[in-house]
Amino acid sequence: MLIGLDIGGTKIEGVLLKSSTLDLIEKIRVETPKTHYQDFLAAVEGVIDSLSQQGEVLSIGIGCCGSVDSETSLMKGANIQYLNGEAFLSDLEKRYPVPVEISNDANCLAISEFKTGAARAANDSCAAIIIGTGCGGGIIANGGIIEGRNGLGGEIGHNPLPHFSEEKDGQPVQCYCGSMNCIESFVSGTGFERTYALKHSPLKAVEIFKNAEQGDEAARAHIEHYCDQLARVMGSIVNVIDPEVFVLGGGLSNQDVIYPIVQEKLAQYTFTKSVNTRVVKAENGDSSGVIGAAMLPLIKQKIKI
Ligand SMILES: [Zn+2]
Image (cartoon, rainbow, N blue to C red; front, side, top):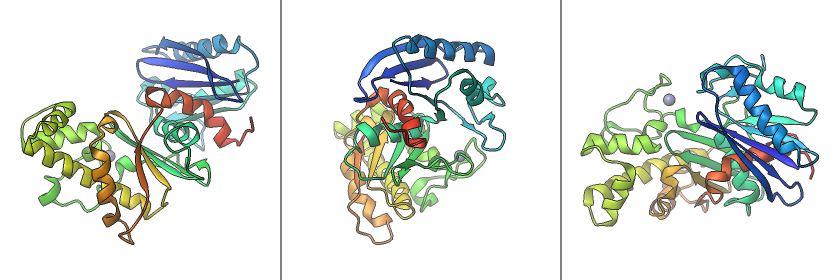
């Protein structure tokens, strides 16, 4: 059996999957402790121990914010602040004598969709992009996840928006990361609302999509422009790794209207101006993170089941 955990700022979700079929056997959800690492570690171990009672566990995969520093093995860049500087992975490896892996939510989405979701027909590559509160990416190439030398593989959200111009995209904007015109500032759900508010008045993303459906020209033009920005991002990814398929996850990915527009615009932003790469919606929904996490050790350590 495989254990997967999806750790967020408010909850820790754990699943137990059957190794042979990846069927769900059990699911647990507990609150994420608010202040101390030791409480957090005890909560995580509590979930793992509870799931382990069902039988032999083959591996443990964890989807979590931040990354494990390749030199110090300590957590860094986590927005659960008390995790930074802690030896989370080593602490779990000491306690559990099975392969343990940690990765971020976008990588877990990519793995989940590649193995059992919208990209399962792909031979050995896909790129997953989360367009939610933020914008993250996960890249599968040659059948493996690209974590990278610094744990930054797939972090497309903090590259500059390709072909940015003030005329098309508005005033330059500084990202919280310190860089200018980050992709996340435009193509995340937050970015989608930010750029609409600059041109018109503040509205929630779902309202903008609803208005467009009802014939509102300003909303329709904003969506069209948003899809153009997304196509520019994908075109630049095609020119680097040329994935077989793009899978979109996160809140805005539920808006079906964006797919044909992005698909139609993608080719013009690639080197050859002619590609047949598909752009599809994630299929595993809210469970993507935790299912992808359970499969992390299979992908990263090439464990056979
Ligand atoms: Zn940034």
